[in-house]
Length: 309
Image: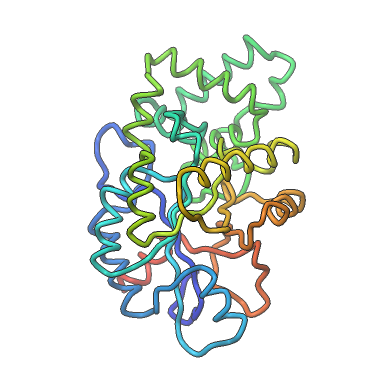
């Protein structure tokens, strides 16, 4: 749990927008709450880059240091968070999913869309029927429990929603994509138009980069390192790097692990590709002996609890 006794921290954000109908499948940090947190962190910490936090911890420099990060490259980060960052003169690091620049929607966000128009119970039932119809041999493997958590993660979500998300994360990516296409067709959803509404455009990413924000890597297709093989991971990250290199004058050699999942082979690939840091979703402050490829990050909800005291 976050405490002001933590001298070296990273804080991560995803959606920054006010809750509204049609977006019930996400759990955003409201705009007012986001500004409160930026004010709180600015008063209590020196806001610096991720390498500066790491080096300050390593060298045991006196003071309190914090870096702000944003995963996924969401449009509300540009529209709602970016103006607040400029107001407080904060330079943050953004980790966009590069496939979204071609108007694709990664599997995780497709599920967010589906859960905004339907219930976890209905999507779970559709999934069960889908497996029965197309992959009956996998029925016992991909059964979604309704009364017991698969993992002790996503504790802020109800059991069924958490289990649905965890099941799809671990699912073979071909089956996962087929299922989500099946759902989008069933609900008459247009991926291209929805992607434009959810994610930053190339122009918007270029603008925040030119105005002092750092851009790091977060994969091309947003697949978990636990769900795909090393060759797939390498090709996916290489493609993301190529797109960022062509788009930006410079991008940070920092990688945000998709779903917070990492692997030894994945870290080896990152070092081969010239990355210097990797950030996780482990919620704690820095220690002096921190591994640069396993840097922990607090979530906005952790900060909210202390900022309101």
